[in-house]
Length: 298
Image 1: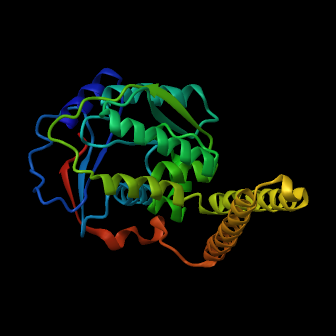
Image 2 (image 1 turned 135 degrees about the vertical axis):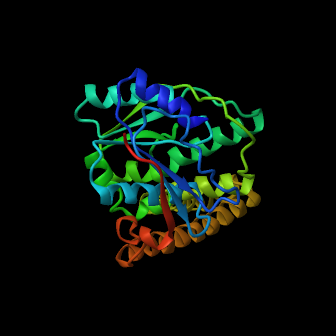
Image 3 (image 1 turned 120 degrees about the vertical axis):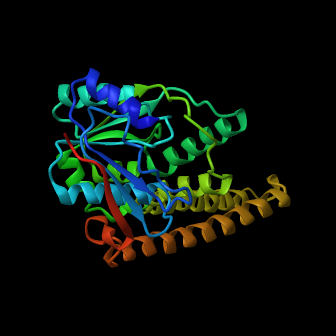
């Protein structure tokens, strides 16, 4: 269904496009005739992974496969469920063409279509993400990258955790283009609450160094403020109730413990930078089980 819509967009926008379908070890067999209804698309490949790795790592593997072929002027990243609409691709491509300094154009979601509880939790997550990393979150996977950006992000270990966060971390010039979310083509999302939380934490883990330093500075500020309040309370003598002095002492102890924990966290993150991690451009082939061509470019 998605390929047919993408085929129509390629015709109307006069584009040339090859398609990489990343089969994340799905239990549903990929039919061999999925490309029979398209006319304008180029080569269509299906890459099957050895095991299910999740959508972020599947994206990392797909981008690394494209980078090693080194023949694409631009690369679009799309989910296959229809919420990333093929009809919006020309708008993202036009933004890159009109802004040569921009290397990645993301679709910025104008609104959420989920229930109230999900939207409330998402707003809380965005607030926490902004507080800990200093970066506003309003984008997903749907985006278009230039060839330079593709070459850069596949050399980042952070890409293995979260695609969009890796782009932000790379300091590549990027832009957000307001685009409405599409309607899911079929079925329901299998993402559980635990999976969503893990996904959000993966995004923040890319900024571990920044989070560690911010926590360290924040807890140090609280410790110093609590120490100052305790000194002032003791200096006031009988003018301050003993219970208030006791609570100030408790706050000082807790904030100091948080400061020590933040210090260990920050130094642990900084020390881990010297460790050899997963590098998508080098290690992606370990996860590829098979690759088959469903359609050759006419």
